[in-house]
Length: 162
Image (tube, rainbow, N blue to C red):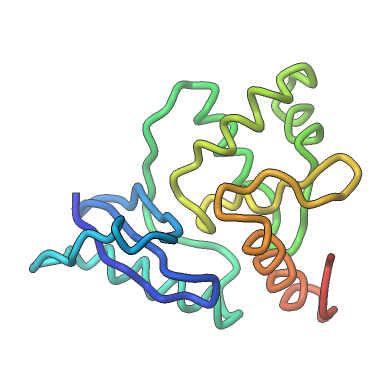
């Protein structure tokens, strides 16, 4: 596994992967968590950084780099459902559970969203509370708000969603 970093508008991002796929995009809030770049970083990590830059510049709405996360069949279905949420849109955790075919799976869905290792790329930030409130984001609610407002502004030409 190789790592690199990108200083984004929402803080430092740690990007990890191999020559074949990206498996980590994390927010770095503690400098002790930084692993120094290794020589010979695969091109795919640089491509991921470029796609993230395009996302933050408002010119990319969908990521094309290959990604991979280890998880159960249920977790894979939850993460795939996140990828189906359109840019600039939100759904509730309940709606996500219904889309997955089981409204009673609400807690398992929210827990699985929290285990997403690919922040921004697998857009768990697009899932909000039933009453349209900002809830549950491992990167911090301020980042969730920033990301949603950014996408909403680009997609709809309106300054803020929240």
